[in-house]
Image (cartoon, rainbow, N blue to C red):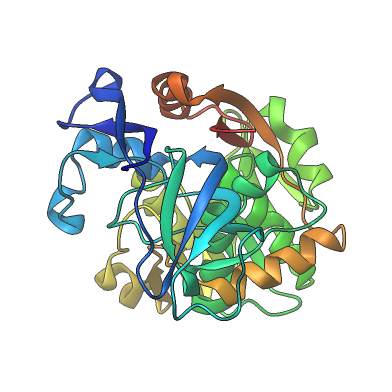
Length: 313
């Protein structure tokens, strides 16, 4: 007998109205996969960019597609080759983005994309870590090789990625500037930022001799960031690949981060969370049937933390 489940899917590209709650078959894990009963999932900007069709040439999804690529849940079954995980394990993941996602009661994930959930975090908090946490980790620790004493500018520090970036930069003893609005100044300072720059009234481009710029905004913000860097500085963007020509003109290195699954880095993030060194802020919570409203909240660009979809108890 085929087991069925609910999933938030799109059968066409479009606005929030394209999201449908469909009843589909529960997938079976392949030899190197686990089947996870989804407790909570999180919305990220990439979700609605995929829904709108902006990334279809890059990711080549097949429709219908289950959305969502941040997940916390419990292992229901395992493939025959999986040795280090077991049924009942509480896990979290940023799974491969070309496959069906986490806005479903069950999903299969490659075992090497899964890590044990931080014991100190709720399902909702844990679901908010993987994509944003890995993005900050890979941008700052891998690509720009952040070092103690570096002067770092993190754009949009009150956003989900920005919040993790501030905390990870401070854990490496960097000096952190971050752009934000006045209403979020207290938040970013509480996360460890040394100096908050109110982008409504202050011009961050007056900064000079920075070691690293972490761009989470793109456009004019990215264009104005080059001159803040010292020669030999590093810029990383998560919006689009930075101009190699401009990097050469300013004698800096430039990188683009499109976050990748990484269970080892998730395990390190778990350690930090359980040591009380990584805080997760929840902006809002929705049910699976309210996935369209969760997307709507994300598209405002005003979320102060993670937007969570609670799938099961």
